[in-house]
Image (cartoon, rainbow, N blue to C red; front, top):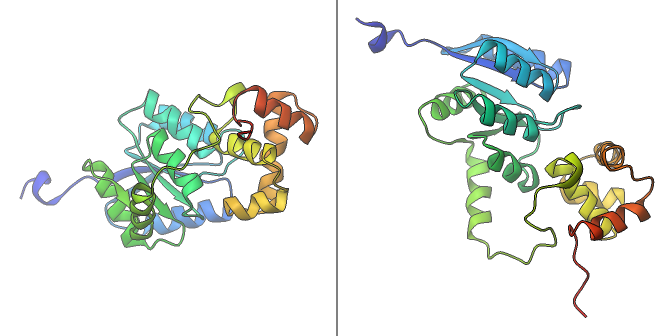
Amino acid sequence: MTQTEGEKQPARVVVADDQTVVREGIVMLLGLLPGVQVVGAAGDGEEAVRLVAELAPDVVLMDLRMPRCDGVEATRRIRAQYPGTQVVVLTTYADDESLFPALRAGARGYLTKDAGGDEIVRAVESVLSGDAGLSPSVQRRLLERLSQPEAGPSVTADAPPDGLTARETEVLVLIAEGFSNQEIARKLHVSTATVKTHINNLFSKTGLKDRAQAVRYAYGKGLVRPPAQ
């Protein structure tokens, strides 16, 4: 029997997650699965990009919410610079707000962290064969989103300014629209602590000092349009 017939090489995988316990747990789980070989683990997006450059893995299992460089931006860099590596997003939340930026950045698969080992293997195999590796729940959300009529968005189609990530731009827009941190957290299905982190990051990148300046900035950049008179 030839190797191509029965001895397929395992998929070489890098795991990127900023939570040590979660990252080590995923690595341990993958180590028990057939057809997968973990070749590296990263604690943030910057390290994930570096490991891809060094190791040329087949797939990166990518968390979305990480310091320094989040999963969406890391996915964008990896797909632009190392197109031979596919990205499967592995995150806690199967929410539209993180799903669509990740897919637009080039992710081919999207799983929640409660996915079982078999589901992870199927997603890895799917993206390597050229298919989309989406969990059933994510597939349903994608179809629901595509079937909905487009509402008039308040955000322009331009790229986020000043190096803001897609998520930071979303938070900025919601601030400009008058939402509190708690309301933003509920709307984006994240914790208030995560919202505060995004606000601190976007303030640092833009030089803003308070919410009033953030509102003026968002309108000045065309991220939010004044209501029709």
